Length: 77
Image (cartoon, rainbow, N blue to C red; front, top):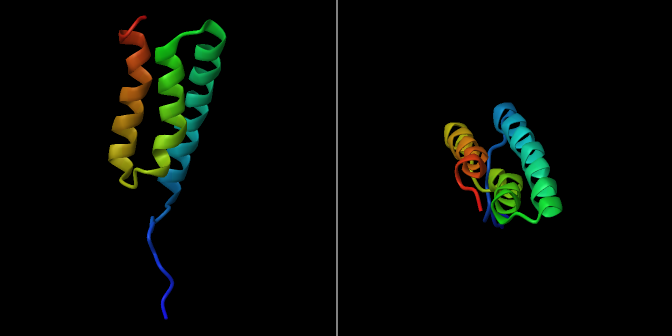
């Protein structure tokens, strides 16, 4: 009997390094948003920390990460 492979993701070096980079930036956004009581950087920080777990394509990972980094600069609340 074969084990259930519900979540199969191939991890390569580039996706690990991009995930580490976006997670680190997300942690910075999260801390800034929590201390300044701002919702947009807080939400983008959480998203930056967790979205690399769900995106397996490296190009899509970079595009989404850059978009999430840019959102707090354009959306001021």
